[in-house]
Length: 122
Image (cartoon, rainbow, N blue to C red; front, side):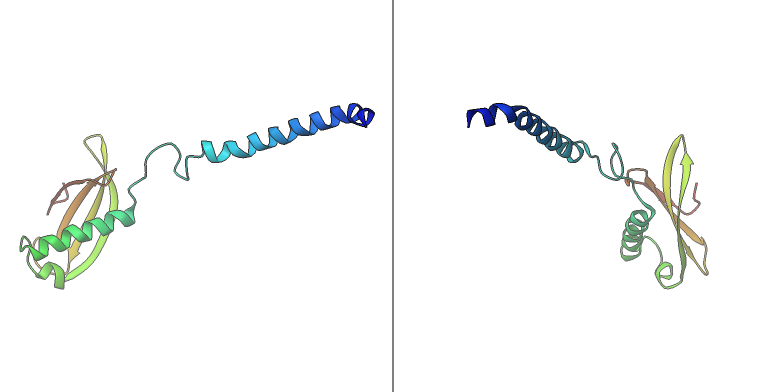
């Protein structure tokens, strides 16, 4: 029995090393994974901007800061990026069919923080 073990010690040793190596390799990817967006934080998407813009827009209508016609005569909503003072902003534009002014602009930072609103878009 002792001869059997001595003759196969290399095989047992080699197999153990291979299994240990495979276990280490299989555990590395989950530990070092950063998700689909890489190292940085999450990006503020156009859909998130539209949702957040609509929430703020509704608050403006309910509080009476803008006329009710902004809700009943709404024509469309646009979401687009723009550069402002060396910073990228996400703009949510609400347009209505009639009345002056015709559009309200709500601005968000790249991270999704409210950055202001006006009727000119500037």
